[in-house]
Length: 345
Ligand SMILES: Nc1nc2c(ncn2[C@@H]2O[C@H](COP(=O)(O)OP(=O)(O)OP(=O)(O)O)[C@@H](O)[C@H]2O)c(=O)[nH]1
Image (cartoon, rainbow, N blue to C red; front, side):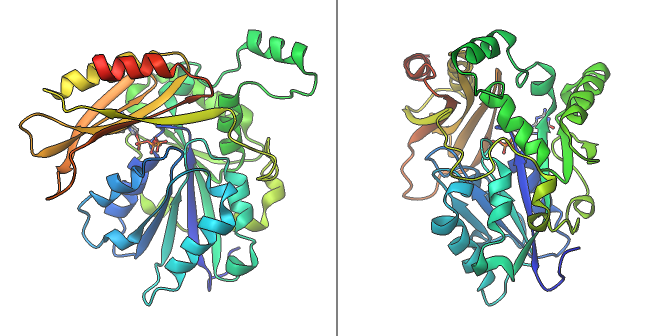
């Protein structure tokens, strides 16, 4: 059980585009008066999810409650970024009652959980629970399944290779560390697919972990917060492909930011992003752009081949109306094709 004098932290993990930011927003909107703070970590170099959450307009949620840790992997920058950011939250005159940590979709959660044993913070915080958000349709489409041909080729080249593809490895690590799993985007899944995906998730789990089906990450906060898992004291129950932060680098993935010019209509940018998403190795595209004659900022994001858009907020006075898209992909993804698609349509 967790110590009630420690501030509970919930780690939200889940692959790129699974619905983590949507979940954080939902929890903030339904905090029921509880003082929440959010630490957001990004893989790409554009602080982004934080800006989505900041723009939420949720009552009681101020800019200082959202702390962004851009550029990289939380678990690898524990001393430099994570511990100081957490300490800054804890040292506030009115510290949060519960902290949500949204990890990058490519982060492995276990090293982050381990970081809660750092002397600086160990007596002050505890991991209340690790929540893994699963992109149901992506799993159903085989996005994380191992490619038998690739595996065979890898094995032939290197007998030490014990795992499948890097996507499956990250996906598995996130499930293996979870105290609770959200099977999300069920609004886009047929009943058969749900059964298959639930079976696939269960296959990966080393222990009994509850799976909740959700659409748009909607789940009662009372179910998610207050699990009292004290995960940092329970690391052995959470096997991982990478047991230490040193043991994992991010060589498997890379990201770039690309400037985009103002567009005439949202559909014009959506069409470009759809084409860019077809380039080999692309996993996630998201960003914003100005639309001719519109006072609002257009947000466009793609997960796999599915692209969505909305206007999130008015451009601020004096803010440069520069369009930028962040593209995350497997190492060596076809950057030229992505640039051509985003620039020329
Ligand atoms: N149809 C459907 N769309 C969803 C659902 N949950 C999230 N989305 C959409 O999926 C996209 C990605 O959602 P996010 O919440 O940004 O996902 P994320 O896990 O934070 O993404 P990264 O931070 O890039 O890893 C957005 O366009 C969401 O609106 C869902 O349950 N159903």
